[in-house]
Image (tube, rainbow, N blue to C red; front, side, top):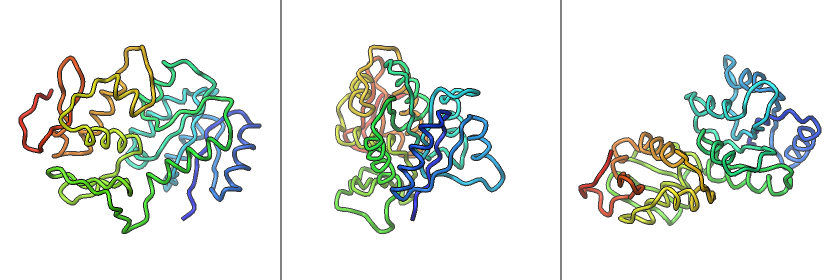
Length: 240
């Protein structure tokens, strides 16, 4: 199935360049040059749900972070991958982008080829062919995760995780029983070497726990340090 990309960008030359390049690769591209236009596309009656959003942070009428926050808050779009495009290069700007739920972050100027590879990687994680169960299925208590297919089940009910949430879950499961500091998770999951105060990790762990439901208790909070995935499903733990 052809993937549809919503491009939210106010630089018209860049819009035309990306539309041309992405359409040549077989994507359907719908564009909006303001935040309002983007939200109108996403919230209109019978509105389409894109497979991925390319979102500029600096729009003329609305901050891109606010649009990302609204995408994550709406039931229909909360699992749509978001790649932020921005000229801002400060570490704090990347952190803020991830805090509001972005899956990836590309700074301008960027290579269209690099952006295309990132889009392809995220879409591959988000959309898996039915029946593709792979050979990397792990079971842990009520939870079952397929690393190759990027699919997760709790009590045989399949969950919808974003690519970033799946990376976070996979990191926890691979390091079960070992405490992961927020700094370690920022580096290994988000690719951020941040010397700033951030709730990025806390925000995403909270969201992951909520999605895991009954299995959310496997993620333990180690107060003053970070988080830990239980070594065995029924182990007593220290949680908030």
